[in-house]
Length: 222
Length: 202
Picture 1 (cartoon, rainbow over the protein chains, first blue to last red):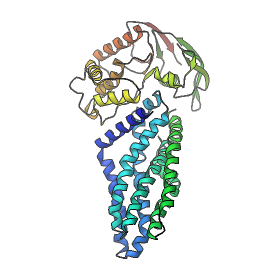
Picture 2 (picture 1 turned 60 degrees about the horizontal axis):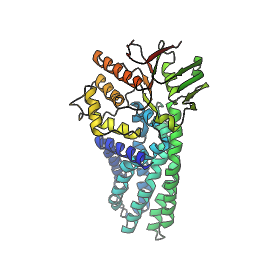
Picture 3 (picture 1 turned 180 degrees about the horizontal axis):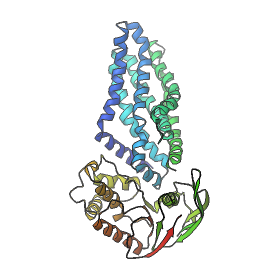
Picture 4 (picture 1 turned 90 degrees about the vertical axis):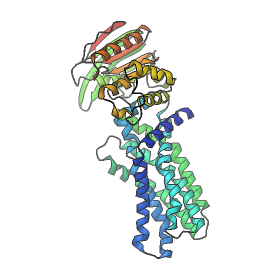
């Protein structure tokens, strides 16, 4: 079971490394969207501190969305997806590997750069640590939920727009608890409760989403 | 070994075929023929379990397909090459074998690529290869393939004369080892070994 998951992760990471422009463009999108806010709002530290969690999280959701349409589309176009579906192990395991690989190239870089961007919003050191943890814990759920949307819209014309309409509403819980964790820390209440809920969302979606995506992929392959 | 009973295929509103059945034993090759749109590829996709038939049943070794055991015996080559443009032929072969849960050493993979005439191009990304060469990368999988059931969709497309003969030899070898093969083709290719049976659709 771990053999196949690691085989998929290894292959997808190698492909991502050969095509670094994709990773870098999503990351730059995140950096630019987040940086536009302080420039637009002006030097008002109180207001910026209030806005920071929401802005960072919304930008993280959108940046994750950018790479989702290609999660299965490339494999579908060149026939690799068929071969994956015909391999002698459950397709859900293959999708688990793909979701983990997607997180490693899309969610993890966001978490690593988020504290740097948080400084622009005058966040305290505590809040920056919680922000990083929250993004680290929440983005796997985004990749997992996104995989369901990517599988359902596979092969549809204009699937990208449909994908956002389908997936963004499902991202709301992650957004609420992710931004809530940082808000609570800024207000001095402690973000542990929110972080626990984020972790729960992530584990639930990583357990469930690959199998739902696999079912959708089988329909797309018919 | 491979049995199909009373298969019916409906695509969209059209019924492509109904009441189709055959039995294929070890060492036999089934040639699927028929005009474009007769349902050859649909039938192949039913045989590999990706397309559920409207009616009828397909059995492998007496068991219904759609199980991990069936897929562990199956090698399918579609008309898409299933190779990654960014990876080299060698990486493609090794990755495909790992994902299909097959044992393939690097030496075997290099040997397979030499046999399909890609010696010296193992380390060139596949996007720089021609159509025919990409097809050869996909076909290189068959060289070391030990699985008993091969299902090949138009395997001879985009190949030159020498490669067609080479592939016919590979398929013969597979049949001689007691393997089964089902394939569609528009070119008539002489397979020198095994029992060849024909099924005409439409």
